[in-house]
Length: 335
Image (cartoon, rainbow, N blue to C red; front, top):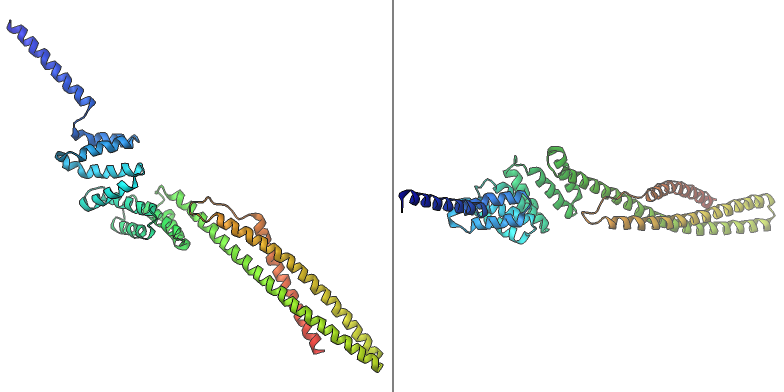
């Protein structure tokens, strides 16, 4: 066989091997390239595919130098897929074995978020405050304050939560949780207004009941005073003192009018008491409807506010009327 032909055959064989090698690299990267492939998949939202790429890296002992990065992105992929149980195990392993990895602060923050999601609010608060103290300049500090606020809110500590959410707004305006913090502040302020309204309605209801009972007692006292005056009229009639009888008769008539006015006031108080009971029930129902932390903000109805305002005005008038009748009773008893 001519030497020239042999060289041509060798060249063809080499070209075939080179093409095969290039095709293999295109279809299936070497294991060393799976970390980059996983990052590309993660950035494209292909979290399951990304997770598979990172697992391939972690399965190769020769790539131990990439394990820190692979575990970091494995955790983020699992959290994106809501695989909280697996994510928790990998977080603990990562934090224990890679304390010097560049992604350590973020994974510490992610653990705090995970504790909140598991409703372990006290530990979430403690861990996130620890993260803030250790890494005050880290990009997730503002978000950490937000999750601390959410934890306090979920525990019913609304005053403390309000302070923490305010930190997010005032000190970390670049945090992408700032709008959520504003929303939570609005919810808390609404809760405070509801609580004040409920307190007022309960106080008004109780005060109305006490006033009704007081009027009932005074009504009985007035009736006794009228009976006593009527007896005096009878006694004076027996003694023939006509002028004194007329004076006492007029006094009796005036007191009977006052008694009727008192009865009218009692009736009005009963009506207002019924309105108070209804307003209180409506306010309690509205407050119960907003008891869950994530419930949308709903304003107190205008009707409830108007009822509270009118009842407050009526309270002042009722107390003035009560003072008048106390003075009137005192004068009657002196006579």
